[in-house]
Length: 395
Image (cartoon, rainbow, N blue to C red):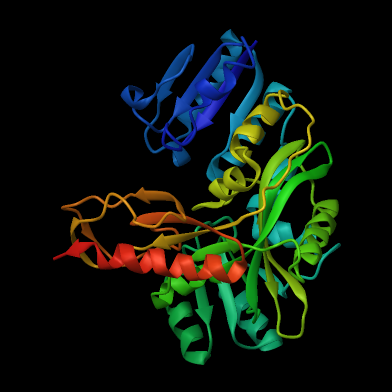
């Protein structure tokens, strides 16, 4: 019996072989988008596949491997691999997230079909023809949001605020695979954590410093944790519990949930994912609980996760993205002179020409900070970001 792993993350972010080997003696087979020379770990074989997300040879390799080494567990953590992993599990007759569950979390229309049974959602509709857009606006008015049904990172999202926006949108080459929904006014909050064996076993609530779509206006995306005493903390947890009661949940998954808090005090679902949140979300779990939630998810996908109690520490944490700007990056700082900065990833490449951000997580640097209060974390996020920006050289 074997463990099959589908991977599109950098090897340093998801060293599956190193994670799993202490827990199992099963041979591990890796299908990856990264070159073999970048991979370390105790693998029975490593197969590099280009254009991984769209290459059907991923499935072909998996099926051929299963014929020779029957797959007992299949691991996938990249969002665009979740459905294909579920399809392979069903073909191989093994446990884990199935197609129904993976599709419900990846397809935003199906997601809302489930979610509306338990929580409040915006008005929405699947887009198959231009008439779907026109009739939705006739019924619900402006503004409204059009987004890919299976997108991520706020890419491909369009906000229609008036008739001229609609005219411009319809003038483009029309393509299926999108949904339209009402624009919800309000602050965006998050609930992240780990779900295992029918319950939330650890979580934290947070708030976006600027919502993900604000990158289109040149604003930074950041997220900070809420204290347990915050008025919305318990409400957000209850919201997640209700939401998960309606969703077809997998046996084990990390989750990232985005919720609007409206001016009239309603909680309205934006979307939910059965995977670890992007940017610094996994780091917030590590800092708060001392555990890597993605690692726990990987163990869970192999039925190796043991039941235990997770205790959250007293400090609050947040992350902020320093986005690239247009121009050539000449240099950027290697260290940050603040003791409360607990993580700094300088991802910019000196000498590289950058364009304006195309997605909410396009990143020059990622900063993690700590604080005793929410306001202190927010102030430090702004200060750390400003310091990095002022110490980068561009031409």
